[in-house]
Structure formats: structure tokens, C-alpha cells
Length: 239
Image 1 (cartoon, helix red, strand yellow):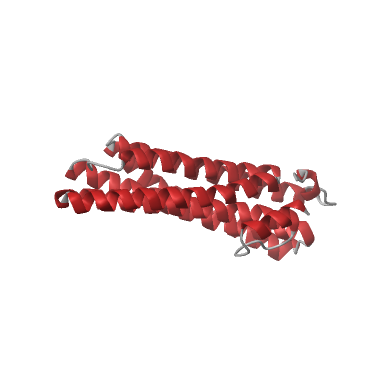
Image 2 (tube, helix red, strand yellow):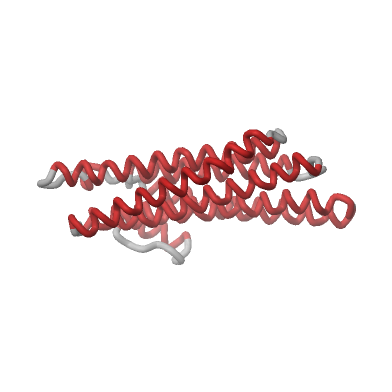
């Protein structure tokens, strides 16, 4: 069920309306940059593009600054406006979502670091197909989670949570194959290990996207769905 954004936008104070809309907009801007960071980091790895990898590393500072700015604005709103009900949930959700977005940015920076190492050491003999596939998958999860937040769409948020299970399976399968390859060719260990760390970072991006989706469900439904499992989450969304 999609909840109309107007539910979160009707107040006596037009200034309060504007403040809430501004932090929503800032979060979506931060999310757009984070999503691009994931895409660029994977591209830098696959194309051995050291310049792009360095850009990803530099942009991580911008993401950190955005998190601090949004968090400070949320704290100011809590102190001055003392919001209640849905408005309070909105501000709380934003403070939690930006933490996950910042951590996605950290994972993208780690991938970029591995890309730079592989530019110097020589590309890994295996794992790029898996990185491209899982990278595309988790980037889409981030995009969909942000879209669910923008539209207060719990159905789409639930779909993101389901996709995290798929990513976990893909990650485990890719890891098994690469470990087997390293055992068969010990000379490849150093470079293939770098790919394994990249895959681990991508799997964590999926985890953070799921966290964002869970906050969307909390925001709309008013119920904390962390740690309750998919089947229980589905029941919350149905209600």
C-alpha cells in the first residue's frame, strides 16, 4: 500500500512544511550520489579505470559531509519543533537512513580502493562477471529503496527486502566458486582475494539497502520491522 506524501505535509506552520520537505530532498540527493558511487566503483573495477576509482574515493568525503548536515538539521527540527506522530517518524527515519547511505558510500570507497590495487597489480583472472552482476543488483536495490522512501511505498520497500535474500545467495555462490579457483591456482590468490572483498562490500550494500527499506515501512506503518523476518514483514505491509 502506498501512502500519499500529503499525510506528512499538512501543518499549521508552512515553515515546518518547508523544513521537512527540505530534509527529504537532501536525503534523496545524498542517495542519488551514493547510488552513483556504487555504480562508478564497479565500473572502475571492471574497466581498470584508476581515475574513476580515485573520483569515487574523493566523493566519499562529500557523502560524509551530507550526512552530517542532514543529521544536524534533523536534530534542530527535533529540538525546535518537537514533532509528533508521523512527523516524528519521518525525522527519526531520515536520521537512520542517512547512516545506511553513508555506509553504502564507505563500501563503494572500499571497492574503489580494491580497483586501484588491481590496476597496479594486474587484473584478477576471475570474478569480474560476478562483480558486474551483483553490483547491478545492489545498485538497483538502493535505487528502489530510495524510490520507496520518496513515494512512501511499503510494497516496493518489501520488494527490496526480498531482493536482499537473492543477493545473499548470489554472493555465497560466487564466493564458493572463487575459493575453489584459488585452491586450483594458488598464484591467483592475492588478486582473487581482492575480488572476494569487493563482493563482500557489494553484499553489504544490499544489506544497507534493506535497512533503508525497513525504515520506509516503519515510517508509513509505525511498526519496527527490523529482525522480524520477511514473512512477518509481509503481514505488517498487508495491514
